[in-house]
Amino acid sequence: MGYCGWANTDPLDKTYHDTEWGIPVHDDRHMFEHLTLECMQCGLSWGLMLKKREIFRNCFHNFEYDRIAAYDEADVERILNTEGMIRSPRKVKAIINNARCYQKVREEFGTFCDYIWSFSQGKTILYQGHDTGRIPVSNGLSDKISRDLKKRGFKYVGAITIYSHLQACGIINDHDKDCPCRQKILDKYPTVVRRRDKEVY
Image (tube, rainbow, N blue to C red; front, side, top):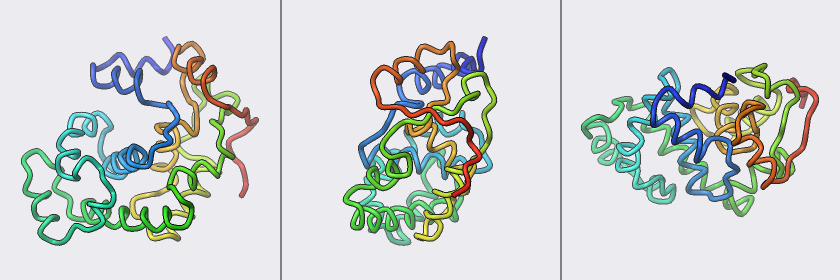
């Protein structure tokens, strides 16, 4: 079994893998949802994020970044007092901060998707060797995007978090070579092959 076998360990994992992970995202609300989940996941398990996803969705108004950007301290308290919510004031405030930064990126680039996809020239990246499991926790691309996001004021966007985000939103296709999802993405979306993942930017 290839490393995409993780998708068979839990029904939530399987659904997420089969219907979302690695499929290119070009909708800003959906992109913000992915980014929020990755930020909330820092220091915790991804399985917990999937289990609490509906709670996050309810707390953050379905990840509508414009509404989140307008949150105040009362909203922070509302979220932290929601049953089942991860009670981290720093993360909750970071999500609100990120929504405000997200708006500024949209003002500059038109959409956040246009901004982040510009780093790969609008194509999904296949790194040689990744399809056999030689996958890093971060790379030159995620480091570059992380640095740029931090410069723009985003929080919880380290290179490792951003690498996971690039996998999730389809900028990097890291499905196993024997995983049918890998080929579906190759067939449907423009792709570029890169020989290494330690790019220097």
